[in-house]
Image 1 (cartoon, rainbow, N blue to C red):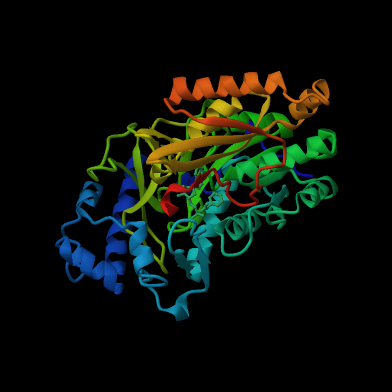
Image 2: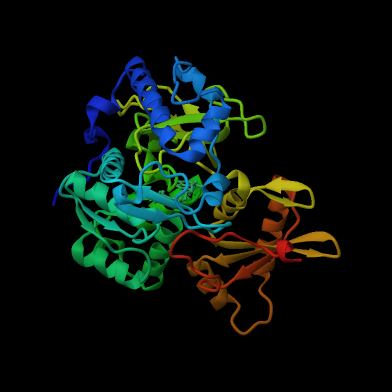
Length: 458
Ligand code: DLL
């Protein structure tokens, strides 16, 4: 069986592109941006929008450098929703070979489409991403991202096939069977959401399945925010290297950016395949571009997509861009990992915080698992917050044994008080903390649900 690459032997899938100099890259991006603006004339929505910005009848003479991008209009999620299902497509249905839909957890779903060429581009960026993680021809990949309308399963699948790896299209769910597949087919690479990777690891612990019975070496995790603490837990529990993959349906799906092994080691961010996806960071309030290194909202322009090319898409994801050289030899800019989305921000009694900050606090306690739920409600015009978190399986067992048959468990009370104080000290929030037994919170096989906000219904 081919070995999974370590740092010293990581290979670059498309070195000609991935190592372009900054000047070559900018030239390529500019010519592709101009071609995009011409292509967008095929779409009524964009034709009108561009006309409003002084670009009529495909007159792109005003675009002389990438800096001119800032004068072009943004696209936002509601543009796609208002023009549901295919109002932003630039190709007729007869040229669309595939539809996918985003999860649509908030508002109307979003439909995206791919031409045959788009599928080829998607396979290419996913193959690059897998190679970037150290995967190569002959490796065995268990792909536990959901297959179907979600882009995770099929995107990774096509990338893996292009790379020449062997794919197990496990899709999400049936966790016991996932472990059996891993054991019997000797999967070396696991692709899924980070919370699902923890579900798999926890079930192995519960069933006392020794780590030696599986051959996993690398995990490629994304589709939801995850913290450094969660990365460490997964790496320890599964004895693997865990790398971050990012993407979104509106831009292509998974494979917009990927951590390499060097960048992973120093938490240096994810390489964006910027010959395809032109990134910007903007101030979410003013919409103005922010300088390199500053944190703001991530915006992407698709440079070659055909079915649904998108101009300056405001992702809602918070990140920053860094052009420092990377030891892997790729010249492509790196984005810091997305810890949260702008619309994930919660405001409780006037205090702002992100669920990911709560995750960081919880995971610094080995007695707790990564499964938690924030329940927000309103009582007499005042917001209330309760945090339900599952105990780690081994701790629950140990503590249960120690206090068998007794009414209260002082260890629970002490831990609850500690978490409550940390939430107050670090995030300035007051929450009721409830410790739950392992398995009591709903398990997600796709993206983890962290918040139930009952205020909206009142
Ligand atoms: O989640 C595509 C994907 C599949 C990415 C598999 C990676 C792996 P959507 O369902 O459209 O597409 O959701 C996109 O998920 O805007 C982010 O808010 C979040 N997201 C995706 N990857 C990451 C990540 C897929 N690595 C939305 N870290 C994005 C944090 C992520 N958030």
